[in-house]
Length: 283
Image 1 (cartoon, helix red, strand yellow):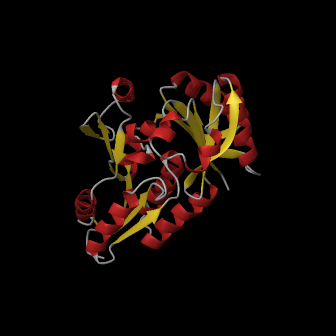
Image 2: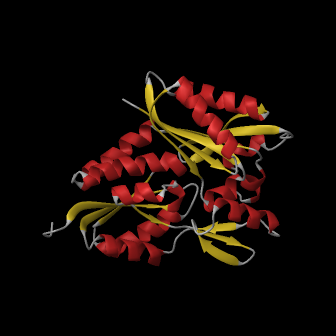
Image 3: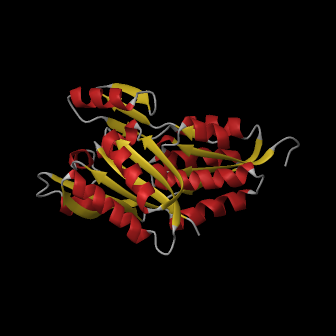
C-alpha cells in the first residue's frame, strides 16, 4: 500500500438512500442513477421528493430510470484510488437494476484494485450493508474485512415495503413475482419484501391503520430472537405514516438507532407513494 493511502474506500449508488451526513461521516461515495421525465434527465437526488412527484404526476408517461454510465464509475474509482489502495463498491441488486453491470465494466480497468459486490437489496436493505462496510473501512481494515462486514449484514438485514398501489411497478416492468397480486387491488395496500434480490409479495391489507399494524407484526416476526435493532423508516410522500411508524417502533422494540428518510426519485419512480421499514437486528 502506498504511503499516505488508507486501505479501502467504499462506493455505493444513490438507491442506497444514504443521507449526506452519513456519506460524509463514513467517507462513502454514492454514484447517482438517472431519472428522465418527459425527455429531461436529472441525477437521482437533484429533485426534492415533492418536486419529483409533482413532475411525475404531471408527466404524460411514467418517468424512466437508468443506471450510471461506465464512465461515471471510472471517474469515481479513479478519484477514490488517489487516497485508497482498494475500492469496495456495493450496489443495488442486479435483478432490479443494471447499475452493477456498469460498475463491473468500470472495475475491469483497475487491475484488481476495485471489488464490486451485489447487495441483493436496495434502499436501506443496501444502506445498512454499506454503512457497516464503511465502518470497517474507517477503522483501517482490509478489503476482505470490509466485504465480510457487508456479507454479514446481507444475511441479517430485513425490509418490508408498503405500497399504496402497484401501478408504478407494473408500468415500470419491475413487477416480477408480484404479478399475482396485481388483480383485485381496489382500496388495498400491498406489502413486499426483497428475497434473493427481487421483490416478493407478502400481503394485501385493507386500509392504512391495518397496513401499519401488519408492518409492525412482520417486523416483530422477523426480529427472531433479537431484542434490539437499528431501524430506518423510509417513505415516498407518506411523512405522516412514517412518523407514526417511528413512534410505534420505539414503543414496541428496543431501538439502538432510528432514522426517517425520504426515498430518492429513482426508487419512487417504481414504487409510487408508500413506506418501508428496514432493520438490522443486533447479534
